[in-house]
Image (tube, rainbow, N blue to C red; front, side):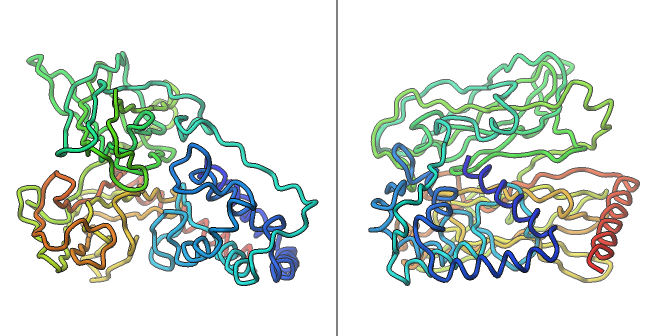
Length: 457
């Protein structure tokens, strides 16, 4: 719901930009009004739309921010967290690479300026006669995409497990039959730990298997990936991530007793269940849209890291990088770097061998394992790679006491699956094009750019 509110706010902003000369008048009026912002006048709306979804009764935030009396004691901390872009928790660098994202939680700079000015002026409540509208949020166990698409067309649940309050990492691997009788194209997918399970589920990956000619199950591909804090995945129009008929879903769930991060419960979690919610396109989607194939895969930033080859020395740093190219043109639809407690930054670049040029796509300089985000590019901005272009994935690790997530800087850290180990890869959704499809998308973008330029004349 937080994301949906934020997206609607962006839609209003885009509409105001289209208003031409009215924009200047609106900015001047807003600036005059925000010179002395108050909670009732301007600040409550920002907090309600962007913070209360977590900071409310029953939410995962460490304090409630549902009214002025609750907000006022925390005003200096709110100012600090907002001005340093630590809250809302969406680490994605401004001014580097693509900025047009789906499900972007970041505040507008004007909103940050309003909160900073409000706190600097003593955090006044404002006119008590102004009625602050209270946001309405669904149950925290509701599906993120339900406001857009309704309830999932298919839910695939894992078996329940009891997770103790402490102990070593645990894994659950099992096959589940979702009962699908025909091929379907996925429109959106979300993995959701049920209830308190969100505190102990580190990741929950799912692969699709189909019966082979000999009757044995064969791996078909990745269904989706979940790590703590992930919102979900949206597939752009004109692509198909296929869920085949008669397929089986193989769960690979990593659980950490006691929990990790802000959602840690520190107690036994009984009947831990993880669910996949799937929303499908209409059954005639393939015939009418003739979509290109999309898949989600793990792209390593360092080969062999899962076998202990990635080493971060005590009180030291490490950087990894990986290179991946394709023998056909592709579009990059999303980028989600993955690591554990020592990883603190990541980037995605494109290298063009024919020109020697390197293009920055995404950079995350304050990455945290407690909030994994799949950065979903707007289809009009998503990187288009000609045949032979190279994806460059870089990730950085900080094993010093300066890293607030580091449990023990005295340890040597190796590559592995435990929470105390490290990983070095990114989950990337790729649409596989042919030459005609690539040329068509390039031409469509150029035409839009020309129309935009003409509209500004």
